[in-house]
Image 1 (cartoon, helix red, strand yellow):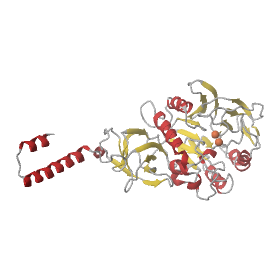
Image 2 (spheres, protein in one colour; image 1 turned 90 degrees about the vertical axis):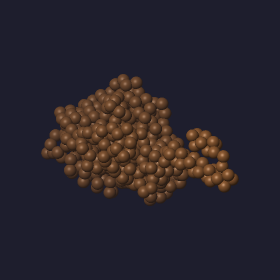
Image 3 (cartoon, helix red, strand yellow; image 1 turned 45 degrees about the vertical axis):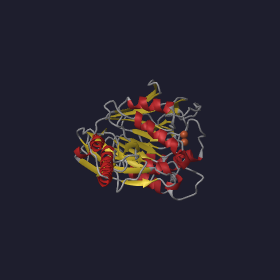
Image 4 (cartoon, protein in one colour; image 1 turned 60 degrees about the vertical axis):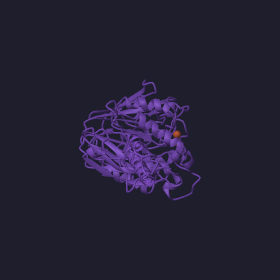
Length: 429
Ligand SMILES: [Fe+2]
Ligand SMILES: [Fe+2]
């Protein structure tokens, strides 16, 4: 306004008038440049934290969903002190890579991995790029290098809705080290037209999975049947399961993974035949991983379709495949707990070994069965292997200590609905 008033006080000649108008227009243009954000119109739609590799104390990965490409790549600016979102003030920087989800306009996924983190430390960060804009300052906490205890939340079969949000909110109150989701996340069935479900789903995770100290809770997710579009016949996993592969698959695949937590726990995430069959390369990989877990007091596997279902048929093809290919390995390498999903119930088995009740103090228990938001189904409580089964939405809190792991299921009101505990594994005979 000051520029306008001054120009009005001058009585210019016609030539001077043209020059003054040009200066006026240029001044207005400069003022707009100063006032207009560099990333006007672009947006970071969602962000979450996961891991790309086995080392969960010194690495983390931040995934962004943006509506615009970042050129050349998105970045994370981070520091051990809060910097109020001022990009120039963060001491550390990591750069990532991006992919556009084919067939969807304006949806880009940026994956930025942070390495060489100081374990057991809180970091503050912004993520994005000048093109996409940055997140507001958020914080995460790296895990200890050698934790003596570890707590995590697990469950599957979530979907989008008030119950999912309520369960996530209750889960976050336990301040877990991470949340492990056992498949059937947004129920989009791999359809590009259902992107809105993923947007709503990611918003729930982002808004609710935050600890009491404000740090973001990392997420690990295995694949479920509702992540795959079975109408597409393709060997390209990204075509059959675009959202799981782009958003959650570690380093773009494969769909099974190992994560270690100090020398306390090895966690294996598996694919119950949705993109990769139980047998063949996956079971070879599983055996190779299991051979290297002897020193760990706890060994757990998380996957979607249960070996010991509580609602569906015991002889369902995927349950049979799990018992054929994986059960002998679980028994031989003394799996502590199988974390199962897909049946939308609450269940816990008796300790099992060799597909029979295990001798006292031995065996594996299987808990589930994936009811972290979806409507519960009826249970088949008379099954010989079930110790407890109920038609109840819930999540499990797994609390590991050197001498005992306790697993407690909570409902959406925060009420305890089941509990059990197990000793650590005994040394291999
Ligand atoms: Fe499901
Ligand atoms: Fe399922």
